[in-house]
Structure formats: structure tokens, C-alpha cells
Length: 57
Image (cartoon, rainbow, N blue to C red; front, side):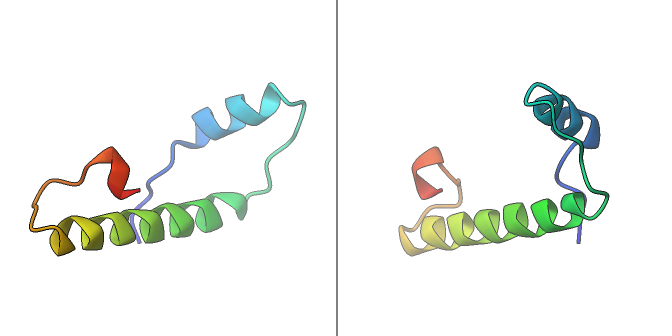
């Protein structure tokens, strides 16, 4: 699995909410992003496109 999230950006986003980040959060977040992208790619295929568009999400 590729690392799809930027750890520093996640930490900064949650710091604004005064939250800490568990080390295993990144693995789960990457997994969910990977699934979201795979679903979007499938929708693009179903519509005969090679380009994934925002509305495929």
C-alpha cells in the first residue's frame, strides 16, 4: 500500500482541533483513501473515461 497522506498535514489539521494523532491512524487513513480512489477509478471506467473526475468520488 502506498502512503497517500501527508503526516505533517494530518497532524496540523488535527492540532487545530487540539487533538493528538495515533501512529496507526495513518495506516487506516491511507487504506480508506486507497479504497475511495479505487471506487472513483471504477466509476470512471464504467462511464468510458480514463480520467477520474471529482464527481467520481
